[in-house]
Image 1: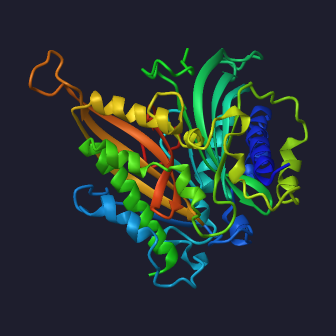
Image 2 (image 1 turned 90 degrees about the vertical axis):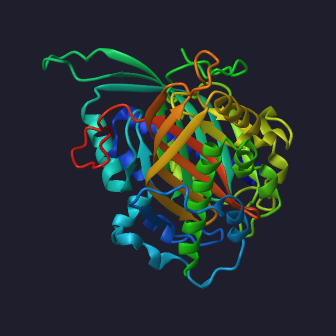
Length: 219
Length: 219
């Protein structure tokens, strides 16, 4: 089995494990599958800076004001850097983004229809909230595509979700079951503890794409 | 300036250039900013297999059938592979996913409310379609966060969009202007030609997140 094939299977397994943990309501397993920056600082083995660096622009970006960014950015990207000996580990928390603990802010999550959540605190709190309000959830994954480049993997999939909330009046029965058609992009990083989620972005499929050749026509 | 700081600035510039190209309706610039697998096969310099490998599961994933994937996947991920000398370049097109040209399928894009589009053909066709139906579009980016790990960068941002379609009856005026609140997760790869988009996932912000401490409350 080739290394590439092995990577793809491992990523697919990590992706499946994530949805299984959500189905079981297993908060610890969900927590464990999200990237912890400490995993990267420990070194993941395949070259380049292994730590995550994060920056936040708090002000709106002025798209007018940097006229040469369209073409010269590419050339600059391969130019020498002023301090190649810097492995980036001490850049955690730049921009007042907190200490190494808060550097976990580097992970991000978007639930369908939600704004961006950033950092392990916000992300994991959102899962605790969702689990507390979900009695039953099942994911039928289709169109799972895995793309691997070195230590990063991108997974896109369609989440056909069937879920039910708590009973409306403290009864014993489930709330009404709801079906949802959602698409997700999941980004994984290879760590010494396996592939971990760096980003999850899920969104509702609301309309036909307008592309006749697209066979993923939403219901 | 540290290498990490330089990376973040270059990624932010590539992200800005992408939205500027959309604002100008500059299809060539948009095309140029999307990753071409050839960029990776040429080698990006910092270790690990530099080619993209992609696989597609055409059948639904059975979440029940792999009981041990929750915990053992992590251990397996660092185990030795059967063929470490394989750089993965010859795995393009596995699973009948086409030749190296079609291997561009590794890029993916989700427009707000759309299903997943995969590959340069589908992705770029969607931009041509959107541009043909958009007379005017402006992005006010806020909450831009950049996270870099080796040769991959993750950008999350809020796209405050103001757009107008063609005039309804072949008139000279713009169609009605529409405001949209959208959040995006953009994944970039470092190539010898600068940072390129590997994935763009944008979704509408539909509701309050339910998190009182979240200051990104949608309008």
